[in-house]
Image 1 (cartoon, each protein chain N blue to C red):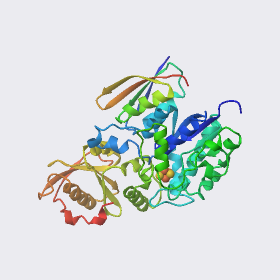
Image 2 (image 1 turned 45 degrees about the vertical axis):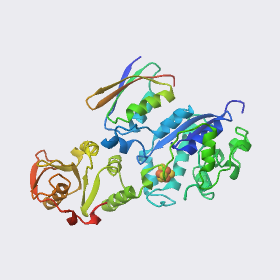
Image 3 (image 1 turned 180 degrees about the horizontal axis):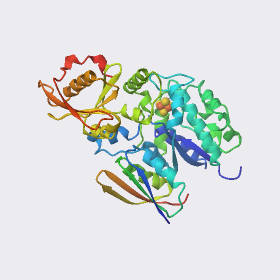
Image 4 (image 1 turned 135 degrees about the vertical axis):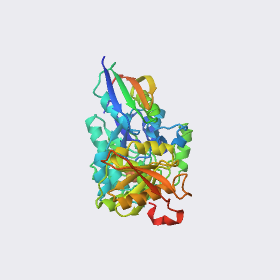
Length: 348
Length: 76
Ligand code: SF4
């Protein structure tokens, strides 16, 4: 090949993909980045939602990284296709509801499609052998490569020397000798290389790149699936799992209560889709009711919601209820539940 | 050189960026795309995306809860 080789990098926003890009750029490879949006990614969401952190600068790490590296970044919406990966992972879940191995295969497969469509030569990632418990073991790496039919065109510059030779190396598009042999959980080699490249600021991802590695989030998602009797979900469902307190007092419904103004505003956007309630006699949050409820259930929900208003220690809080599909609201006068009356198990 | 609009209200980042990116693919150099969004994150993310992909943000305007970002489409 006489022309400049073109490679597409899976960009997560962390340091490792930054380093991998630099290593290949140093060899004269033309690099562009690709980033997949599953709906579960830890992006600006929680910041955008929560008022208290609105002052802080919000940024999308993948975009930021691409800018530091001077590469184009293509963000791909895979929300629909990802459902099959998450609800039916061949290799199961990690510690929480994270299907990392299937997820990686899926992303490499999608990157491969993009590569073919856009006339690129190979794909690469910032993976390091042995770094993450499940998807980055030496024996699982070939699984990822094979499953997506990309083993020949999938390069991992940070640990390539420990893996079988790939097409880009054989063809001389990259020099194997100048690739690396990082291995294991220690971050020291990465940090040293970052210093060498002059990176002084980078995101250190804690755990994983998405909400599915978060225990509290996975509990809420598992609850949603159990209650529905199926693993179906849509984007609104998984967004709402990121906000509010989720309390399930009965099997057939749960109450989502805003924790602060930003969350209330965000949830307000969903009020037409849900029966919802808020206090009129005291300051308090907005609550959405998820499930089909009887008038008895509404009374209980109102008592729970009253507990989170400024009238929590009084004997009477007025709660305005807006039923889904009913234009006319009505008011319930309830005694707030005391803290002890809300069993811990109700909190998701 | 036409002006186009894109309603990305209520979408959270990175969805406004993805919608703008997919729309811009169908536009010609010099066209203007006006993206209306509500996620304040878009005020950072869209300009960053434009900078790295060769487009230019020419104006950011805030109207009530709406943020309107005007983009001049660059070379593909
Ligand atoms: S942490 Fe999430 S996004 Fe990252 S590989 Fe695992 S499932 Fe996929």
